[in-house]
Amino acid sequence: MKPDTDVALEEVALELEDLVMHFGSVRAVDGVSLSIRKGQVTALVGESGSGKSTVGRCIVRLLEPTAGVVRIGGVDVTHLSRRQMRRHGKEVSIVFQDPAGSLDPRMLVGDVVGEPLRLQAGRISRRDREERINEELGRVGLRAEVARRYPHELSGGQRQRVSIARALISSPSLLIADEPTSALDVSVQASVLNLLADLQRDIGFACLFITHDLSAVEYLADDVAVMYLGQLVEKGSRERVFARPAHPYTQALLAAAPVADPPRQRARKAVLLGDDLPSALDPPSGCRFHTRCPLAFDRCTAEVPQLLGIGDGDAACHLVGPDGAGPDVRQTNSAGSLQ
Ligand code: SF4
Image (cartoon, rainbow, N blue to C red):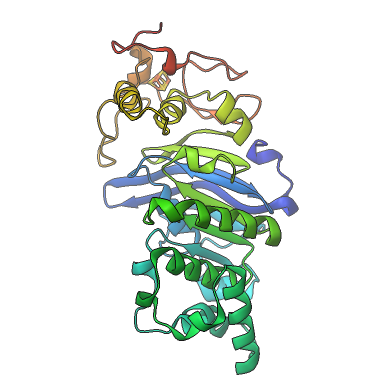
């Protein structure tokens, strides 16, 4: 991933500048800066409660950010309504985690998928609309007859395909995919993920892929951004983040990704991440990860580490050098010392 300031404006699909979203005293998102180039996929990774879904909701205007700037295709949309965004040709769609909750149960699938067309500028004939709906259903692997069914008559995987069809029918330049497979049966997760990857490659929309599971991003994302308690702690190309994760939290997340031996897997995760995520109501001082970091030392409780360039990407840790080199928590023993 290039540093955000180096990405030419015409190349940028999404740019977040110091995005802040507070709910009263809960600091859900606290100064997130991120850019996605056109046609690229960035995975936004973190545990539940890290603020990653809140970032997605700020981008699609479901939430009004407390501060910061959201730019789509170079245009500041921070204070535009979704209708105004459409007028600027800045179409952004979102696919939610739970298709059962995000599809209106009283609407036929065809009407659900075709709804964004009603909101677009210019009239479209009924016949053209039906054609577009059938085309979109076909694109996500569903037969045209599904249009005359209700969402509850479909399986979870089929409903998520309907959500994807609805999200893509308006030809968005940016898709927010918020944990699109985590509410589905394990048996259908891979097929929905593959579908998203194929569509992204064929159509070329930019995508912010929000997930808590680093293993799910391995073949889908170009870049990875890691969030912890409302802040980014690491950004970089997928290759580099997987091969040489710089931040101790990224290293711990990677170590927690599923391995063939479940007991070993559980023990590893417990050693590295220990307690649950602290509350965003009262985040720890200094480095927010210090209460769980096996490498924490005095400076970590007192001084906030800045997100600094490390060659390929950025990391925010006092122990990571400008070349991205630093200790690896995966080499620590259960007492938290490096082996
Ligand atoms: Fe751990 Fe300190 Fe680095 Fe934070 S700054 S990740 S507590 S070593």
